Image (cartoon, rainbow, N blue to C red; front, side, top):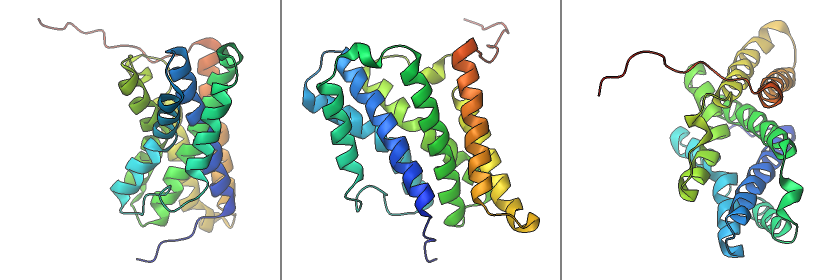
Length: 213
């Protein structure tokens, strides 16, 4: 099929999510006292990891290969992290920014999957993958436990965003509204849930059954 061209709104969401995730990767490398090359690598892998996996799964051209801005944004973000003290990026501020990137990427991934003809449920999963896989790759490369291995609400906000985005885009023509409303609602709800999890340390219950050894 002919790929549907996504709107500039989603393009800006894409770059915003890339910048935020790239910063989290670069800052992690800075905390580990790595070289600039490693910081740039972490920024790139974290920024494009989820989108790359998504595009490979849905049969789309890998989004950042033919885009002159994506790698430049990751490199610029690594430069910012290199020339600023790590303490500027400590605290919950970076966590909230990461939450915004998570929600933005979940919107983008779901919308792009639908645009490529992916059915609704897999399309929502593509949103989750887009929002979370870059951070998972970052943590694995850094040799630290991933956030998905804790009960903290992280994948859940991405899933909420993706489901609302897909449902809203499917309902928009029936309701006579623009699909941008679905993107905004999905982003707002997912970011609100992630922010609440950060603010009040919300998490899902862990498995309480007996584990045989």
